[in-house]
Image 1: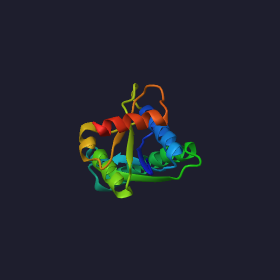
Image 2 (image 1 turned 90 degrees about the vertical axis):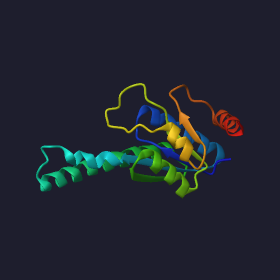
Image 3 (image 1 turned 30 degrees about the vertical axis):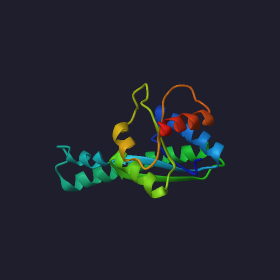
Length: 168
C-alpha cells in the first residue's frame, strides 16, 4: 500500500512518535522513508536584532546560527536513521515555510504518505515552528498521518484508519 513515506521530524516527543509510526509502516509494507528536517524560513529574521548593527558581525552571527541549525538537523536525522535499521532512509534538510516544504518534498519524492508529529505535551528546549495541519491537508499530494502522543498502535490499525478516512 505504501512505497514511499515522508516523515517530517525535528526531534521532539511528538516527532519521535511520528518516527515510530513511519518505521512500523515501512517495515510492514517494505517502504522507503524520506526523512525531512525543516529549518523555518524565519531563521533570517535573527539578523535583524538591534545589537547586530555592524554588517560583518550580523553575517558572522547568521552563519553561526545557520551552522547550529544544520548541525542539530543532521543529529536528529542521523538518530532517526539509526532507529530505522534495515530500512532505506533518505535524509533531507530544507529551509522554508514548513507546510510548503513538507508538501513540496512529498510531491518531489512521490510520497504515498506524510507522517508528522502531533503537539508535544511539554515545551521543547528549541524553537520549533508549528505546522498548520489545515493548510497541510489542503496542499499535500497524499494523505497526512498525525502521530499523537497516545500509545503506539499497530501498522495495520493505522492503515485501516487511513483507508476509512480516504473512503469518506
